[in-house]
Length: 397
Ligand code: PLP
Image (cartoon, rainbow, N blue to C red; front, side, top):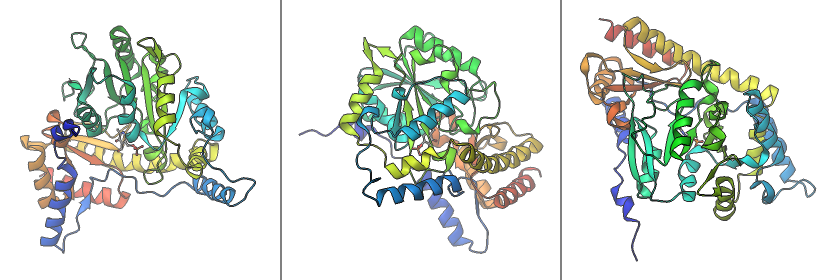
């Protein structure tokens, strides 16, 4: 037998392991110092009360013969009506009309950003932004695909635009972006949609952070752009929207209008899911269905508002220091330029040792991340304020 030798081409991901190791070593050497982590990529606030109440009711349903649920409904790839209806209503509020059959409930956006590749040939060329959420790159290395990069940099404010001289079949776009926090306007996304339609390509649009968008000129969904249903699949998640990182629920939209190679991608994906997936748990789906209710939205907006305020504390500090950054306004991530031409890891060490603040070196997200640094808004307000006061004192000297 032969293994999938593409796995041997994967680079070890030392980023978060090295951040953790260096932080632990510093703490052990300086137990008296309070180290603050502005590197947290996970949510820290608990689930909204409306979600918890819905999950409790779903647990009770499972305890009674009349309301017990086994496998989810076949006709909708295991998505329950209550959840599908709530997702359609959330899209309708964004001005997007979809049908239930366009939506596939998942256990989160990360799985589907790799799983979706099952319906595409390994011969395709993939276009991935650099820097980027590392999973897009690794899942395509595993499949042995040819990878080309859309170069993001300070020059294009980390929002690369399409280049007609580059031929791509599959295009990953993440907006608001992890790690740069940069978010495309609808007009910018229209250029990507037109490019994809001209090339006969498919866009895989990761909208995991769309609930942080607070400006009608920016896109919340790629389907707010004309022509997107003919070229784009949208990957969505309750993780950052509603604190579901530990619960696990998301949804993937494959519009029926999306045809490639003479086939409906919706039908291919439905076939793939019914073969390799058996659905997201009933209790999880009922919890998720409470997110886009009036009460649920009010509660998750309060949590997002808390993170947004932390992001503002960080960006205000960088504004005072005159440091270039992207993100923070429509994203929990702030992507700052390292001062004094330091490399990402030099700045990591400098900040840890002199301000006892931990962030994430940008070079871990791709070659164009070198010289940049990611700070996150997922900590407490108190810690964020203290960390920024220390950064101000250190860099404002
Ligand atoms: N997509 C992006 C861009 C992310 O940053 C993350 C998590 O950090 C995910 C997807 C993963 O989402 P999920 O928890 O739904 O798998």
